[in-house]
Length: 186
Figure (cartoon, rainbow, N blue to C red):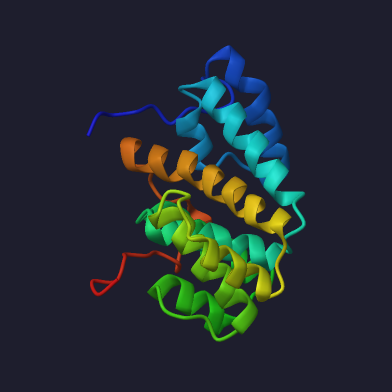
């Protein structure tokens, strides 16, 4: 794997510095993902914009983490699974839901399981989800808006997951204890 620079706010390309400044303000530090993304200020800005937009969606913070963790699982992203496990714990998501998402198994909450299943289909089928599956998602209490918000969440994770695969992003210290490897049976 090619070696990518893990930039700081001082060493990053000029066009990336304002975004890294905002990231540091939001998180208190610059995660390795964004430090690597700074190689392409456009990627960094795009990812940050999508992250912020998904946070404003009509999905709850717990539902957003279900989408993110499901996409991370499907994309086999060790970095984002560890990071979003930490974030899910910070918002007090049910431990059984987090464990199921990390294992790739059915969630113990029927509504969240419908979201998990639908997100899985969006990722695996690259958006070619059968109408019956869209309708099942809506019948579980979601909306057509939520259908498209799942696409937004998955798009956000494509940017981060693929970046992590290409650059070999190292885990940040805040992820300690939440390391992850995709289960063999998944």
